Structure formats: C-alpha cells, structure tokens
Image (cartoon, rainbow, N blue to C red; front, side):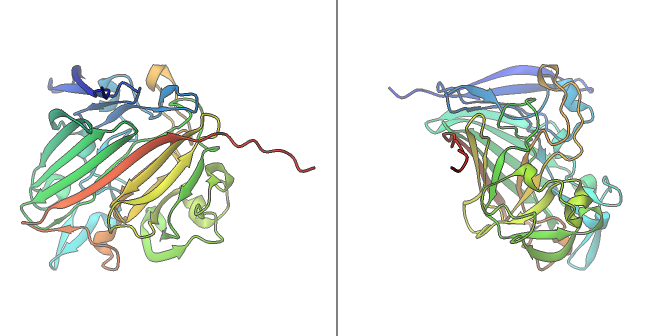
Length: 360
C-alpha cells in the first residue's frame, strides 16, 4: 500500500486585533513536511533530506506568530500585490498615472499581502496534501486600482513543495506574486550560505541603478561576477567590487530565465556540499530574483537562534522589477475578465559528495 499524506490544523496564535491564525502541517510518511500559516501564507517550516536520509528544516523563520507580526524581512511569506520594486511608487495604466504608497525610500517594494490574514481551505489528494489560501485585496489597497481576488495553493509532493498562484481583478491593475522564503540547505540557523553551489539557468540579468530600480538594460552575465550558468559557490564573487554588487552589498538581482515565461522551466539549482541537499526551482515565470540576505540581522529565530548576514538564500520567481514602467519588459497588466496564473516548484533531492584530491 502506498504511504498516505496527512494534513492537520492547530492554532498558531492570535493577531493584535484578536483574530486567530492557524498553522497547517502538510506531511508525508517519508519525512518531508511543511508547516504553513494562513497569516501571510508564511512557510514556517519545511524539511528536506540530507544524503544520509536525515530530514531537517531548511527555511528561516520563527517559532511563534507574535514574531511574524513584528518587524522581519518577510520570512517565508506571500508577497504582493507587486513583488519586488516599482520605481517612484508610480506607473501608468491606459494613460492615467497610478500612485502607490512608498515603503522603500521613494519606491514601492512587495506590498502588504505578507501581513494579511487569508481564508484557508485544506484538502488531501493522491498527489499530496494541499492548502488553499484566498484573500480579497480591496480597491485602493496600497494605492493599486481594482479589487484583487488572490488564490494561492500550496501542495506538498513527496519530494517538492508546489505553489500555484491565481488572481482576478475588477479594474485594470498590475500583478506580480511570489514567495519570500529564505533557504539554508545546511539547516536553518546553521551558518551562512556562502559555500552553497548555485546554478542559474539564465544568461542575462536586469541591470539596476539607484534604489535597485532596473535601468532597462538586459545585461549578459558571461564574464561577470553574475555568471552562475555553471555551478559556482555563492561566496565566490559576493564581495566583488563590481558596481552592481557593491550597490546591493551582495546579490539582489533579477535574472532572466532562459526560455522563461513559456511553461514550467528549470530556473535554478542549489547544492549544499556538506549535507548533500539539492533544491531545484521550476517556474512558469520569466524571472527569478537572487537575494543573498545582504543586510539580514534578526534575533529570536527558531530555537532562539540569531540569523546574520548571508544566512539565507532567496530565489524569488517573478516578473521583472519595475515592469509597469518598462513596456519592453514582459507585461504584468491584468484586466477584468482575465486570470493571472503562475506556478513555482521547489524540488528536493540529494547528491553524493565529490571528493577533490590534490594533483600528483
């Protein structure tokens, strides 16, 4: 008989207004487990096996709801309405300028979905346990036009976490949704990710200027510190004096996925040599943001650990930053009667360690 998946619900805590937030545990008998709260759609806990078959939590975060309601770098949350940056907190639609609430200097970053309480519905199928989250963003929230109906479904497979996004609007608007998990394949709280080997299936990056706003230039990565087309440790070039890296204090850039935006495509592969854990990222999105936790300093993490700089790796699947102001970029415009859809899969496996010997 095939092992059966499981899904349980427990109270995670109460928000400052008294509303209850729940924690949903999705699991398989083989050891893979995800714990997700309907507050912000946050992935609180996610396990992956090492090469000896030992499962360990690989996402940064907190043990309690109260910490998620305070200041934190959006650990594990659904972000939007527009993931990443919109320059000057403004963009045009049909000749009318839309003004957003600035929250990153003069710019708009990510939005407010990460701290909203979502309606949840759970189910279990043959492919795995699933959690469906829904949120109706009111017209004018954060300055965006139209009432936006957002649905996010997390499905735990026996070797992966799948995220399906959907959205409909009552008025022309822009949409860009992602998940903001900070991964550490050695285990959450077990040091920095600089020895993690990363491959990005992307030959180009969107160059940025002040405020990390794209200049419009699509730059080739070949021959630059941004080249992860073959496996390279994150730490190999993170302190390079390249202007783009100095500006972000590390990597915080959108990569243009080769063949991205035309079906489910392999975008990234991360390998942690000590544990043997491998994570592959597949997505229908055209871009992926590499962020290396350049300014991370967070106390009170899981089991009381403190997270420091470069202790998490974010691989945020997305449309390009500032696309509403860049007609040459893939469009993020959504009109009434249309449906936004997107899928991302974080797939886990292991790799045997390759022992390097000195040349004779």
